[in-house]
Length: 321
Ligand code: TYM
Image 1 (cartoon, rainbow, N blue to C red):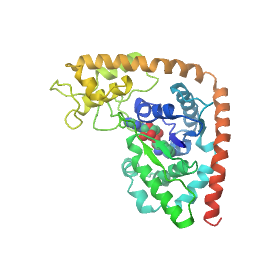
Image 2: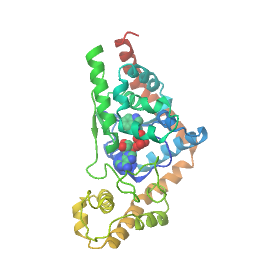
Image 3: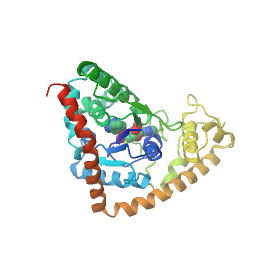
């Protein structure tokens, strides 16, 4: 099964990224799976150059620590495969301004930024190119990327109808629980690096004491009944979903065992700390050898280019270039 997915190297990786996407990448990795750190996308965040360089290496270590095996799948950095930027231009001449300006993420992010850059609008076209260059059949992503996936399908179909069939039309795949992990302090908003409230996110590399504090302080409600109810109990339901994702149960099954919020929080905090500990240990070991991480990325970029190159040339030729 051909798979592609990507993650922006912005800030630090959090458990929303892990439960919503990266954990699926690990469980579905195979010789035909391509995972990229999308540094070109991160440029839309007006990120400091040094920070971007450093975080790109952090993310390589985090993804390996989470369980990606470069002997099995292909892990690479988007900007090291030039076909992504080239394909972006071809697809900008296929996507319409109207459909891009209707994207929820664009509307939200542009409303928060003065003088936002054009890249924020065309961001989903670059993403469509990432996917279509690899003829991906499946794209494991969290719930917030569904609209971008739908747009990718539309662009692929429009291209195929107009220029002949070049692209595979992909489908998005979401996990059963935790496709949208919510902010611990504002549980009606998704956990997000770009809108972080200090206690709202758990990062994969948080110390046990920080994890414990954040879970204990997570906003719930006052009626003290443990049950799954997104509408009336978003904070508690978010905790139940996280619990279920880490323990491999369903959220209602977890809810059945508890009558008090405090007990649930205590056990959840222990479960998260225990689940992340081996990854944190591997992360420290891997991050210490930056040369090895860079070499691995260079190897991944070669493997990726072998697939992306021919597809790019087919698309370009189909358009008359
Ligand atoms: P990014 O970097 O914001 O997030 C990476 C992945 O994590 C998922 N995610 C979440 N899942 C559950 N709950 C949350 N609170 C949460 N926050 C983030 C995202 O859905 C995503 O799967 N545009 C993409 C990156 C991208 C990409 C691609 C993805 C670029 N090209 C091609 C797939 C295929 C993004 O900004 O993800």
